[in-house]
Image (cartoon, rainbow, N blue to C red; front, side, top):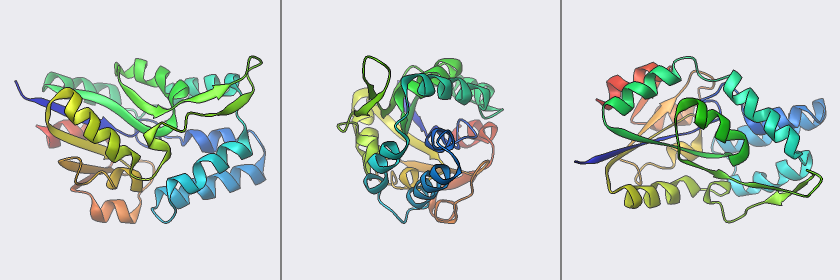
Length: 213
């Protein structure tokens, strides 16, 4: 039986929040604005992801406890139709993975809540006291076109005949060519470049099953 693979972004797609911006908010209004501006520059497609990735984290230095709190926030702010939509997609024979430039430890609770057992994101490192100690720079999604590398690897791993990417940002749109279709998502952020370039554009995840068939 042919394998169909659905790749989902996390921030502003499966959840209403941008996790790194929420961590920035903990450091006060100036830090929040700086982090938010860098996130938007990358998501809108004007700035390479690697130009902002380490910079945002060095500014925030999130603790292990803050990352755990973010995990709970992801679940609390889950896209309201996500569970039902993904259940329908599974019934139609699709495998599902989260592919995100966010932080693995924070995304795992949301993945568990949604019944998704595959997360490709960026792992943060912490010292014995829980203080920030950097990130795993080998994770592809901390770089431009990193989601492309993940899409190619997962296609091969699953033997997928069809790969579809869903997300709100430029890094999701980039996956065109390595995914068979890119579906833009605009419930929380409508990015003109994504809306114009995606193969389809939706504003609610409950529109997914009808598009995927």
